[in-house]
Length: 226
Length: 226
DNA sequence: CGCACTCTTGAGGGAGCTCAACATTTGTGG
DNA sequence: CCACAAATGTTGAGCTCCCTCAAGAGTGCG
Image (tube, rainbow over the protein chains, first blue to last red):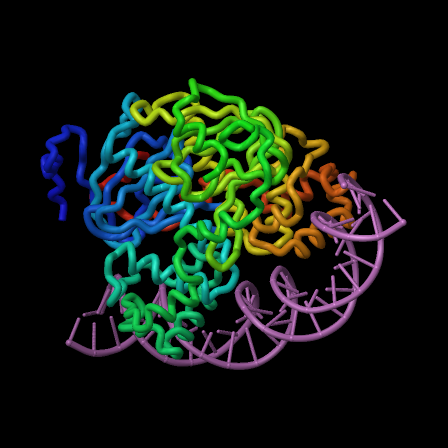
């Protein structure tokens, strides 16, 4: 359990470190200096914004292979271990933000934020939970059985719902034959198309619809410069 | 494609370019190549995600001095002129993402996304609208009179509410003496503390509360990054 | 002046939150 | 390994808030 040696890594980058965290432990806190970033070796991580009213907003879940924790300056969110977790920590390269992994982390952060916005912006509970399940399945490349290592409370705080509504909604999906549960932490997606229909298809771009909207003239005369 | 791409493809663009857009015009669309970014000289810009169901999510408003439009690869959101707007366009420096303005734009994008998540995560309409007004006031450094160049519909699509609820909520604030309206587009914040109380104080970090939570032991003996 | 657009306001109903109880799972110590 | 405690998950009843439907008022432009 304790044997975390720094020379575990493949690239033999000197400053990388292997870290282990127990379920529930804090990896870093809101406000900490963001002088390093992380890659998930195994386990699951959540990032959380805490608000003064006690309200908690989970901005993302990170699974094996994911990277997280790139910020400019102080951490804008905390990171916590959802399950027992093994990470590699990498120092932030301030002089060279082009570093491959760091850019990947940044993309991942933006992606996660956009997904979160997508989930919160859609109105009703069915849509949010269905979308959440599909996203989890997609990220875990497990369209059959989707592990849900986080608690219902985590899901609720991610989707802007209460734990009760999340639970009720999931039960509803089971009743409708859309999914099956093997314990609360393992979900089998039975009717993918049904879920997609509820989730509002796909979170992908609706470019066609977009291009059909408000095509007014440009001051500058379009690209041609009329 | 939208206006700029054509010019860009011709390669006739030296470096920075001044562009003007009329109220409602599209600056770039979801899916366009993200080969440049922008700074607002005057006016207001909104960034929008469109979903297949017709649902629109505004992810941010950008005012004078703000930068926007940094993405990796294709645009993940559209940008539109809320009012008549003047911009400078800067080419993306793929080889040198450390470029000052570009980093600023990236920070701004993450910041905007987090603010959006914050607004959507808060549950009821009063909280969302109050927080929105305070954020607008703060960004515009105008704690007295806050201009609201965007329509109620824009605000609604930003906050995940309907236009009716936004309007009713604002009217309610007026009735409570929290704000005053000089026309629909100009808002005077009368009772800042009252608004802050409704908005849940401040969107700042609640580190104390956070640190008091689940401080379990670490496998490795110490947290990372702290 | 009339049309179009935006904003405001009202009435009614439904989705989800609150309160409450119970079931299930997990963890701990004897 | 079992007993018990704590945490987590499920389900129900009632009520509130916000969405829907609908109508009217204010504003700008041709």
